[in-house]
Image (cartoon, rainbow, N blue to C red; front, side):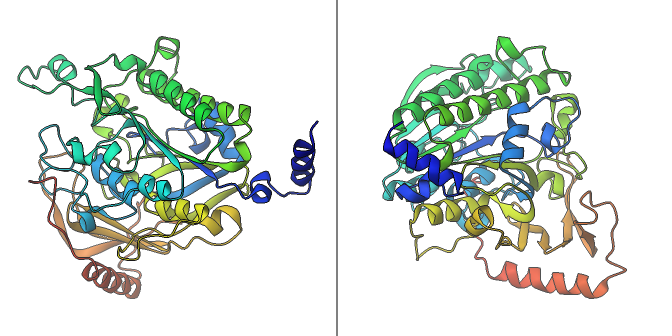
Length: 451
C-alpha cells in the first residue's frame, strides 16, 4: 500500500473524504429519464418494477421526495435544467406547441448559458449523451452550448418516420438522426439498442476522463413512447414493456456506479438521477405511474411536476429529504460545489442546494411555480399549493379559470384529493397575493416554440 492510499484510508476512517483533502473539483453526472413517473421505481414504492441499483443508490445516498421539474413536458423542462431558468424567462415554452418538433425553426437562445458552459469555464470536460430536445438547428445543439461531446438524438424517439409510419402516419417525413459530435451516424436507428449504446458511451467517457474533472449529462430517451429495450431485458419485467425499459435504465445506473467505483471516483462524484416530467398516462400500461400523486405528464397537478430523484456520492450525507428541490436548482448547486460563479447579469430561478446535500440544512427552495405555456396555473409556498387554472393533460378540452382557487396541503395530502380553500380563506388569499406578486416579477418572453 502506497503512502497516498494509506493516507486516504486513514482520512476516510475518521469521516474526511479524499476529495476534501486533495482539493479536487467534484465530478458531476446527471442521469435524466424521459416520462418516468414518481411511482415507477422500487425505492419510490413500485411493487413490480425491479430497480435494485437505484434502490441501493437511494439507501446509500439521498432520496428527494419533493423534487420538481420546471415544466411537465420535455423541451421546456430540459431547458430549465440546463439553464437554471424558467421557460417563460427564456422563451423556451409554447402555448400552441408545448415542445419543439423537427420543423421548429429555433431552439435554445444563444445568450442562454448551460450548466456545461459554466463548468467548462472551471476546467471541466463535458458530454451530452442521449436526448437533447432543446433545438436541432446547429446553433442550438450541444456542441454550441458548452458540451465537448455529443452522442445521441436531437429530439424525442417518437419523432421518427419509421415509428410514425408504424402508427399509420404515412405522411410523416422526418427521420430521427443519431449524432456523434456534429455528424449524423445514421437515421432511424435500432431503438432496442439505445439504452445499452448510450451507457457504453457514457462508461467510456468516464474511463477516459477519470483523471480530470468532468460533467456527464446522460439523458435516456426511455421510457418515453415507443418503448424499447435490448434483448437481455425484453419480456423480463412483471410490468411488461414499460418495466423492461425501466429495468434496463436501472442496469445502466449500475454500470455507471460500478465504473466510478472501479476508477476510485465514488467519493468525488455526485450522481443525480431524475426525470423530465411525470408519466404519459394516456398510454395506459405503456405509460408509467405517478404513484399516489394526481395526474401525470403535461398536468400542473403534482403527478406532472413532481418526479423521483435520487442523489449519490461519497460527499453526501445519507438521508431522505422531504424539502423542496428542483431541476432548476442543479445549475446553481453544481456551480457552487465547483466554485464557479454565476452570471451576475442573469436572474436564475434555481437555488444552490449544496448545504442541504452536504450538511443538515433545510433547502433554500420554499416555493414552486407551475407554468403551462405562459400561464401560471398553480403555485406552491411551503406546504400549501394553490390552483388558479386547471386543464386536462391530453384532451381537446380547454383550460378552466377557477372562480375560487383550489387549495391543498400537499404535505398532508400529496395526492391533492381534499380541497381546503373554504376552510382556510386567509391562506388562500395570502397565496393568491403571493403568486400574483411573483408573476408580476417575471417578464414573460415571447414563445420560441410557437414560431
